[in-house]
Image 1 (cartoon, rainbow over the protein chains, first blue to last red):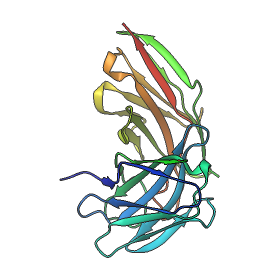
Image 2 (cartoon, rainbow over the protein chains, first blue to last red):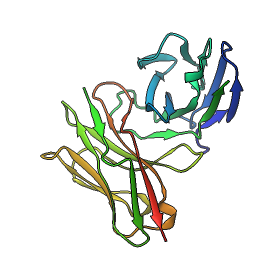
Image 3 (spheres, helix red, strand yellow):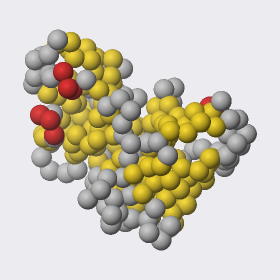
Image 4 (cartoon, rainbow over the protein chains, first blue to last red):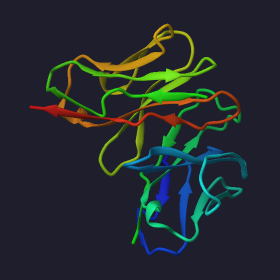
Amino acid sequence: KAGVTQTPRYLIKTRGQQVTLSCSPISGHRSVSWYQQTPGQGLQFLFEYFSETQRNKGNFPGRFSGRQFSNSRSEMNVSTLELGDSALYLCASTDKKASGGADTQYFGPGTRLTVL
Amino acid sequence: AQSVTQLGSHVSVSEGALVLLRCNYSSSVPPYLFWYVQYPNQGLQLLLKYTTGATLVKGINGFEAEFKKSETSFHLTKPSAHMSDAAEYFCAVRPGGATNKLIFGTGTLLAVQP
């Protein structure tokens, strides 16, 4: 099976712009989670989707949003970009179980966003 | 609330030496614990995970970890370091409930000296 894919891999934007990142999970996986990784804050959970429904959301401002489509692909959007949004954004997919537990999260390579 | 503490942001070992990366967790419910590795410019790869049952967990690339409830620890070890083990390692805990969310530690950067 193909792994989790994320597009684009690298992105440069300027302050005030908006950006959309895409994630395609492993075939058959219905749960997708997003994380932000920065040198200062480390890995922080953004949100989680299961079967097109947001199941959990991290402590991020409303400028960060996401959605999941019927084919389980997910997008996240950041509006009104700030310098501090520069980060590696990681997407992870999990197998079909809805109850969480010990299912493994498989991570994509990430999208490196630079805000100038 | 669950949390994870990784002691030592940087660890340096010689090739062939023991690798020990420390992780302590805080959880009000029996935890699911994970170790991930991240190589430069890549995503995270699962090394191993603890769910229930056997407290000594074996993972990929010769790594293992022991769950010690009394010490709330889940330290990662490898008997003999290889140059290819140089990477950043993250310990993570999954909260209870219907979620796949992971709470990560701050990471430990492992350097392997020849």
